[in-house]
Each structure stands twice: as C-alpha cells, then as structure tokens.
Amino acid sequence: MSQSPKEKTAPDDRVSVARNPRATYDYHILETHEAGIVLSGTEVKSLRQGKASIKEAFGLIRQGEIWLEGMHITPYEQGNRYNHEPVRGRKLLLHRREIERLIGATEQKGCTLVPLELYFLKGRAKVALALGKGKKVHDRREDIKRRMADREVARAMRGRA
Image (cartoon, rainbow, N blue to C red; front, side):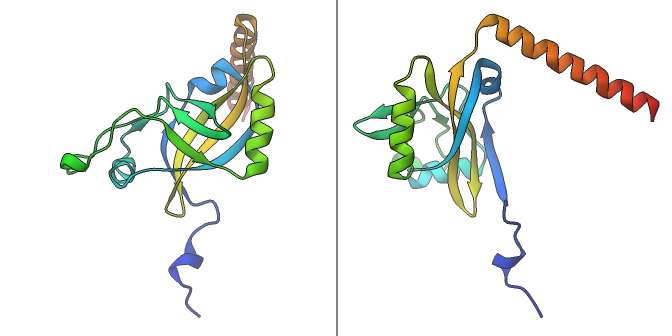
C-alpha cells in the first residue's frame, strides 16, 4: 500500500530559516508560543532562500495585536518594483487567549517578547516567540560556569568510554 506525499512527512517537519542565539543568553525563557506571521509574496520567496535575520527583532503589543519589529528580510532579487521593505513591522497570528495572556505577562516588570526562531512548518512561515525576563550580569556568568562544567563532565565521560 503506497502512502501519499503528505503522509510521508514527519509530524515535526520544519525547515529553519533564522535563529536568535542571543535570546537564551540575554533572557530567562519563561514560556514559548508558535505564531504565524503575515508576509507579502516577495518576503516569502526571500525567506525560502534563507535571507532573514531576527537578531535585533522583538515583539511589541499594539492595539491588542502582537507585532514583530526589527526583523530583517533581504529584498527578493527578482522582486523589482513589487519588493518589500527589509525592516518593517510584521503582524503575528495567535489565538485571542494567547494574545491576552502575553499582554498580561508583558505588563509585568521586566518581561518582553523575544523571537527564538523563524521557520517553515508544512509550508507556512512560523515564529517561535518566547516570553523572557532579562538576565542580570551575575546570572549570565552562572550560566557560562554551568555550561563549562557540563562540558567538562561530558569530556570526562567520553574519555572513560
């Protein structure tokens, strides 16, 4: 019995476009959400080529909606006059309950919306959006020490085997 192409794909068949490595370094990640993103045609074509950066991006609440500001998508080469602006606000698509929860959480002191990853899931552009609380300098130092200790343990275990 043959399978259709849709059945052959894995349930978590996602293609990563851009990651934000500084997010876990600068913030304590409290919770994550998967959000759709509103894009124009040339933006999608440019994303499929992997030309995007979310390092400077952040989530913003505007009139009861969540927007992703500061994300850079390089203009599509064959886009001519229909091309998009590289850096502009892009609306995120979440359920109303999730939006209300995030609005309430960001009103707390020190919480912010940070994009972790931009990817395609079943052909649709998605953003992994995290609710984060800024780390202090001593928190970052403790994380670095913990990572170094974990590496040392792994190295020692690898040496024994």
